Image (cartoon, rainbow, N blue to C red; front, side, top):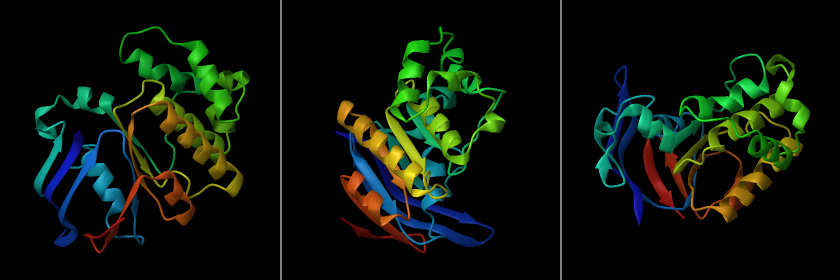
Length: 215
């Protein structure tokens, strides 16, 4: 079943074409890697799909319906975007992990949060840790956990390992592999790293805003 369809998608900024006539369909449960050089339009594509920015022309269909027809809050509960540089808020790790429950007016699942922390090599004690004491790798792991405590239908990962060392990259890769095995969550991952190709079911390459290769 097709979960996402891009039709003649284009984006232009300050007279420059960033994305040019992108056509592609993603099936439910697929893990898609989006490759290409810096400045090719990969991150812009994810931001448009996540509705952070608006397309210039073309159509984006989510579950066969234009994304503009969804309530933005409801859409973002199903389509979750994880930034290249982790964005944490509040004072502690727990402040961040309670957020998905707070916006749904539900009780925080402490047990599930601790389980997810342990799966990425962090202990229960991290719940009370101030976010300003975390390393870059720890912040990125917390940010990803926050995005999947309520499993989205589609997870958008924007070069989430680009600033991490090999050890932290491998922790996140292995966790993504385990999540993929446990669920039918659809994942779109922008990456420069060829090693991350092994995570994906399919790969596409974007160069100068054009989709030029599908693997």
